[in-house]
Every structure is written in structure tokens, then in C-alpha cells.
Length: 302
Image 1: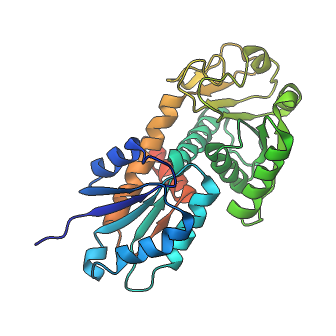
Image 2 (image 1 turned 135 degrees about the vertical axis):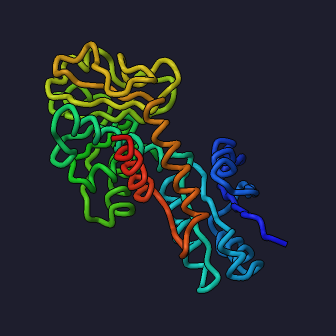
């Protein structure tokens, strides 16, 4: 009897994301098995139950998906999963907590395209302001932009938390090779005077950037918002904006909305889930790999 493709889907949350289940099945996984309220300390035992219950050929049809809501925790679980395996008992693992890694990848890749096409620029050397940046999307976007060479400031409501998250991103995700600074919402009006790109990655239904602040951003080029719930995160950038001019901008900035970013996020997640099926060797996927395939998808449209 032919063994089915089984994706074991782990989350530290109470519920597994239905979005991720749909994505897995649509990508070709035959069975998506949920494991909820998973403690990080349980990873080794769960992984070894997975790998030792099938021979090497069966493991080619077996994968692990790591969800949850915490970016660092997801990366730690990915590392723990990798360390729990030994050749030839290995499977593909993909971490994407709350869809944050693929969402961040889509946002940064889409921004790169707008900068290239409309301003003949790359992210390297530009000033990036990430509003609501202490969550998993903001964290992943901060690291990706900093790795390219952007000057990244991560902004939240509390300075101490913003500083802690910025350091975590620099040290844990960037291997200490990048520098991300921190700020607070109260100082947005000052930061925005020298900002080239804005990422709005805060909670749904909260406006993070007003039209007045956009008008004061004299060197703003791209503003991207991942919030699709009214009020939107950036005034004048609707959910379907795809490089459209922002009416209140005096610097001819363009906007990227949640739906246009979401399409790239969807493509990235779909391609990585398929890559797990089509792999020849064990692979361990996270935000950097999501960024690679998001870029590939955008390039394929040209």
C-alpha cells in the first residue's frame, strides 16, 4: 500500500490555524495532523515519534510544520526539531508562526519591487520605520530588511519592549551581524522626517500612520500595511493598493496594501509547502527561505 503524504502540524496555541491547514492540503499534503498546546520541551519526543515510525522512504512523504504566535519560540522549535533527528531518519520542517514569516517576506519583497521599478533604488542604505514592530511580522521584516543593508528602526508603544525586541532580532535572528534600533510611537513625527520606507505591522483595526504624518514625510517612497481590518494601518493605503500613489504624500510615495502583500505571502507559503514534498534531502525552512521564494515569485511575473 502506498504511504500517504503526512504533515504533522505543531502549535503552542490553543488552536491550529485553519489557514495553514487549508494551505497544506492545497499544496498536496494528503493529511494534516494537528498538535495543539505543544510545549517546546515536547519537541524532541514528538519528532522522534514521527521519524522512527516510518522508514527512510516513508519519511520522504513526511513533514513537520511549526506554527504558534512567537517568532523566537518557533525558531527555537525548528532548531530543536533538527537536533532531534539523525540520518537517515530526517524529514522536512517549516516554521511560519501565525503566517508571520511568509507575510514579512511578501511585504519586503513587494517593497523591493516598488523601489526598483519606481525609484531605481534598493533597500540598501535606506531608512526603514516599522510601526507596531514588536510582533512576529515586524520582527521578521526588520531582520530581512537589515540583512539587505537597510537602517531599521523598530517602533512600539513601550521603549523598553521595543529595545528588547530589537536586540533579540539583531542577536537571535541576525546572528549578531545586523543592527536594529528601537523607538516609541510618541516619537513617530520626528522619525518620519528621515524615513524612506514604512512597514505597518501592528494589530488589526488600528491606524498607525495618519495622512498628516504621511504629508510630513519628505523623503518617503513606499508605505506597506499588512492590516486588512478597518481602520487600516496607514491612512490612504487601501487593502488592494499595489504600488498606487498615496494621495497625502508630498514625496510621491506609493502604497502596498494587505491584499496585494497577502497574495505574495500565499504564493510563498504554497511554494515552500510544495518544496517540502518535492525535496531530495531534509530541509529546514523559515523566514529567509520565504523571502527567497517571494522574490522568485515576483521575478516570475516580469
